[in-house]
Length: 131
Image (cartoon, rainbow, N blue to C red; front, side, top):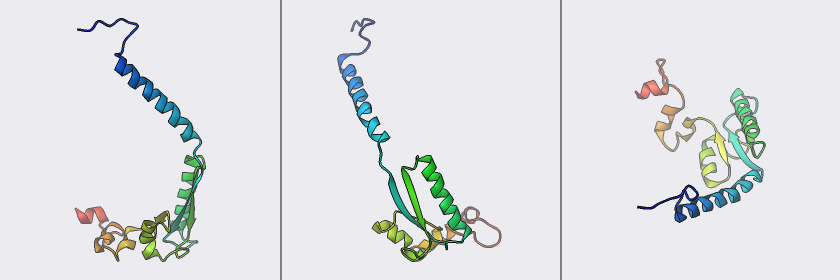
């Protein structure tokens, strides 16, 4: 049985772990606060005057505000970089940093993508249809 005094609440090994954790936190925190601005180019699947393209621009503004303008999303209209059906491939290849569209744009890769994009007929939404 180990006798501990009130001046020594932790064993020497635990004191080392606590000290190492404190040092690691102190080193990591200043790097987070000095993060540089990152710009991402995102293509929407919509023309510039479409309401869904406006939604993408609004989202980009909100992301910028929430990150203190450290992450800026540059939203470009459909066809600015690649055609809409090639957006996912362009993101995968690193040509674009993101895409704003619907799952049906991947229909050429997998036919089931259409189920998650637009609701089927007869008044069902996609979740009801799958159920």
